[in-house]
Image (cartoon, rainbow, N blue to C red; front, side):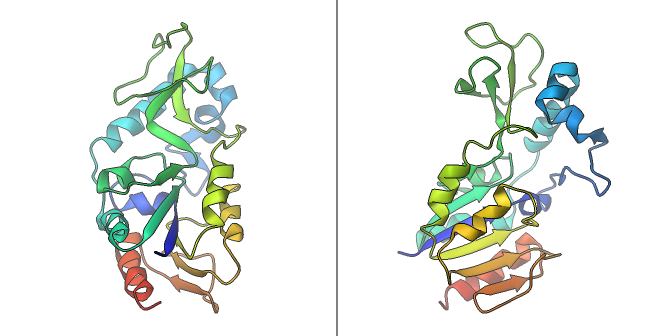
Length: 226
């Protein structure tokens, strides 16, 4: 059974109604990124950071997976599928994908500021005073700027076993996620799906200049011919 490795970014969830988060001017929904997505920002103004993620969490609970999410989930009937996502939403899981690795954390989880291994499900607002069993404040289970990406090594292990690589809705400009495509075996057939692709087609690279809901189904049709 062929192993399909899928790398997804913000464009994967945009058609479900989730904002792509970072604006062209570098602001994240009107906020300086370092104020809402860094350990320093959390230390300076934890209420702002918690409310920023509370708003995103509320929005996530109101949207649904799109057809591209379901198309990837249905691939599991015929292939081994591993999804490595930069997204912090749970839309892949909700659509039925069973093997999802979150590089940048998960919005519907929280963790202790004392023990980063103390992670719990969290679907409601997270406020000051919400503490772990040891009495330390809980924080969003999100990888912030300046923090290590703990799942990157596992993601590399997945990529080196790929028979086919599918990149969806990401510019592949943000590291370390952008480095993952270089770990697949040489000659691996790759599909790059994005309305504004940062690459051009080549021998083993098929670029599909479409949003996810259109491009994923096109890639799957071509995948069946391999």
